[in-house]
Image 1: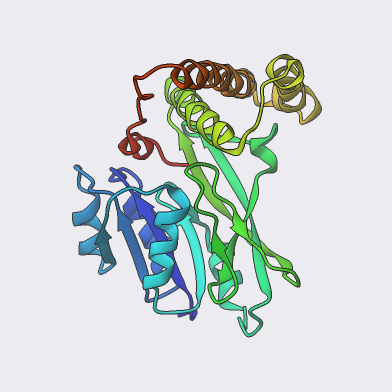
Image 2: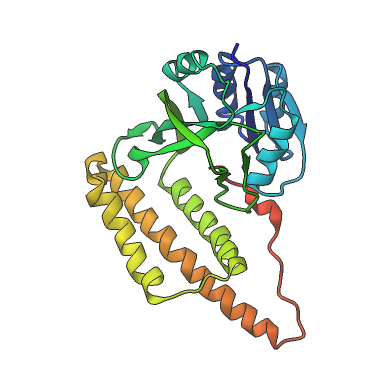
Length: 274
């Protein structure tokens, strides 16, 4: 076994969690599941596979991942989602690592699926992420959405052979629902950071996102799925700033009103995973 811990955050992931864990067990003897009170068979599957399961309230993607990191047996952390499955080439690649330099992080290529179809082009076809790192130097940012790894100065990046297979969405409806959901969360994040709406990010940026995904990155070669992905990429970009515009108006209205602004329900953030 490789001296690393696999950390997975979950919420109702019974359809994919078993295969994710099976791949992880080829890598390590320490698998940590941080579960946000799943109501399906996620927890029973994880426990039957001898994973360490912890249930806790939802505090955001980065915050919950960091909880798992803190509970890990090893300092080296492989972070995956429940719908992400390491292939054999990646497993073998991980077994060759010495993991003796904590300044190193490891970038892994992804193969993303729309239903059962592998997406080879567009933005999805170029997907890769740093997912293996040493917790003594690296943690996740704790923003509510689009968490990122905080890499200190002096960090070195190495690319690994093999892939993580990401079973992202079942169909167009789920893809659109995720786009809508993340647009809402992103708008809230933008509002908190003071980002403003302008003509470029409201109108030009969505159009460019579509052109980049569908034409420049060859999304049209993926057929109807490539078109749907490009369209939803456009929609997500546009919606983020439309929602931000509404939030700005609501904030201004409530500034001059005695009625406090309604607060978003944090539990909503667990309805869809990355």
